[in-house]
Length: 123
Image 1 (tube, one colour):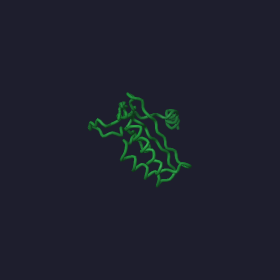
Image 2 (image 1 turned 90 degrees about the vertical axis):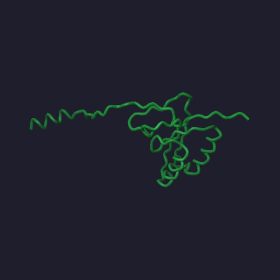
Image 3 (image 1 turned 135 degrees about the vertical axis):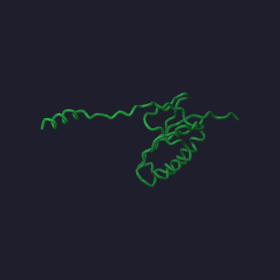
Image 4 (image 1 turned 45 degrees about the vertical axis):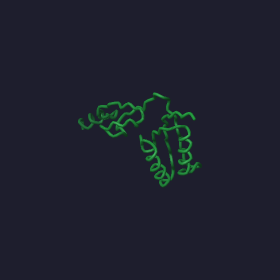
């Protein structure tokens, strides 16, 4: 019997009930890497994905909730800006392929702030 190829998938959800969110989130944290509150990276075969889907459907109400999976092509990297979901300084070969972009901390100026400051100085 030939072995099935494994691939990465992104799983995202929008669940209405706080209780269902909690249950689904807790379950997915045991099965995949949490990237954001409701986005996970999962690695496995098509057969394992079908089993995962069946389990995830137990946690949602299909009439109210939205659950999605996106298969990543081989060699695709997840692009990360801001805080990384991965533990810094820990090398884990199980992490999904990713690239972290360094962003300098720059305070954003709101358009019009200079004009307001000038008005206050003139008063």
